[in-house]
Image (cartoon, helix red, strand yellow):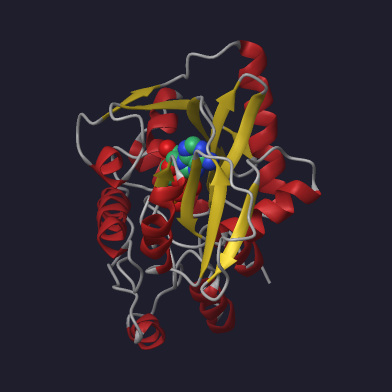
Length: 291
Ligand SMILES: Nc1ncnc2c1ncn2[C@@H]1O[C@H](COP(=O)(O)OP(=O)(O)O)[C@@H](O)[C@H]1O
Ligand SMILES: [Mg+2]
């Protein structure tokens, strides 16, 4: 838990909730703050299995997974390649498009490029290619808002995505060991599921199961599984989608979904009668070396 990314504080929330669950299930679990001395800590603590509760860079991106592969320590969740693909929203979208999976239209921009030649149809969403928890993301409704949104996003990554804004209902589909779970609908009071809406009690309404038709429900679940397979995930993952008139579009896949007691994957589990502690143990049971 913890680590080196901008999502460090959220990771502590996930990590401490999982630690508590593991201890109450009787495991000999210890917390490790995954900083630069991680390999030494893993060795000194004699870690046999790693339950990864890191979010963002140096945790959800394949680097820690690569270290654990080299050290021969089985770990939870996706392997090196799937993690590296999913952390980068632009690469993920390229993979989705190659598989014919609907995702909003987009362009990417690096620091030296400018937006002059681009035909941008507002509104758009500007976001860093990496990073999560809605860090550095803005909804841009007109030309005058574009430059500040880009400079905000460039604070977090050297590649930025300009993505078509999708107006519709936001849902998230957790996938556990290749099985799509009950769909959770997210209704932020402000209309934008930003950092504040995600982590402040009462700022977002969650509906589980989502109030969608059984047809759309099936389309979303099939789509989530296609994304999980296309990226090559293992263990738990969560696919964020927005449903417009033409059906769902995939926004992103998270390979280490939030695991605070109020996060979306635990909500889906709860909806299926699986307690938080049981969910954590189930994720632990899936730990492996992916090779
Ligand atoms: N193309 C889009 N259209 C409409 N809303 C979006 C779009 N992309 C992101 N959002 C909003 O921003 C939130 C965070 O975006 P997301 O790409 O999932 O990044 P993060 O990794 O921070 O969760 C989403 O949950 C959604 O509310
Ligand atoms: Mg998201």
